[in-house]
Length: 473
Image 1 (cartoon, helix red, strand yellow):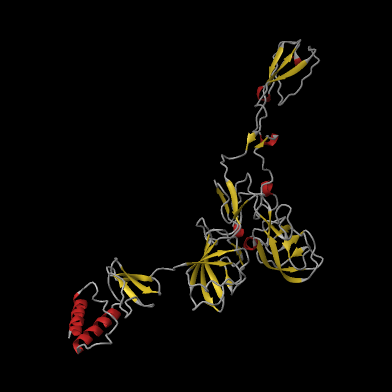
Image 2: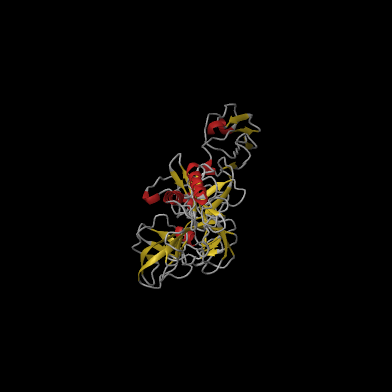
């Protein structure tokens, strides 16, 4: 009787206490005698605990052992919003928040950090953590195939210069090219199944994206940069390796079909020669090494050397050349030292007529054309001067005749024995004058005209900045 009374009181306490009303014991009595009502109440309390995920302000201990059980759930009402937790055998893990005010379920994104060392196959699913610190310099070709399901995402934080080897199926890298990380780079990896992964994004430590389609390759930028911006190089006409900058090489290379004739230096049936011009390297099967463009028409390219094969071939023209000292393994970077940049005069044949061959030579409408004369000052030539008439005087020593040479006309007085015996005469432009009648000598005394032959500036008001070229996507 005493046992039944105690259990009944305990059951009533469980049912009446709001703090632990949803944490009734899951342990039914196995000894003694209890009434059917008490047993039913005990079962209801245990079921209420299950239904409410042991809702309460303190961790539940509803097992017969008086402790939490591995895998047990608990809605922690001691905080707002309430947290749903699960016991892992040692600690309560937060699965998410129950936002009752807004009726939202807010699970944590990720959780836990694991460390892995770079290998050819670096298994980032071996550990359940959502974030992995990756160290080492071994090139990675895959992130493994042990993930539990397709669509799993992992965040990778790189601590080293780790090469990521691009593959169109097993390791898809932004920009469709291999990339070597820097310490602090972060990547978001998506599992596609069968050991295939795609890096959705790679963000540098400074927050910039590895691939930024908003700034196209080969874009020239000017700015007061304290350090070289990511994905750029200074523009001074240098040669860079095509293997190191494959995307940039593709961006500045025009490749299209053209027809070669062995022994002839003209490529015919070229679809688009707009922007091509003299000096640009030409490469193709059947084109000799070191060949450049000498001239173009709307459908032809004239080369510096003759072709050694016949037929239609892909023709590659490098608009920025090979670069200073470069070869067919390099590509050039625009030289923008001390230069402004102007739009081409006739893009797609839409001629403005503002540039001419006088300043830019025969390739004035080509990409990367530079003006022939680029010094900051010039001296005037005679043809640059406006028309004007020099002034001066002529004096005759014995005849007391003075002739004013202004406007190119000279006049004599009629004072007797002077030049010509009196009467007016005129002549445009005297240098020297001699006479024999009544005069022993004559001379022209010119008055200096103009300035001191000082050169004039041809440079517009200009402020300098660092000039860089985007060479990586």
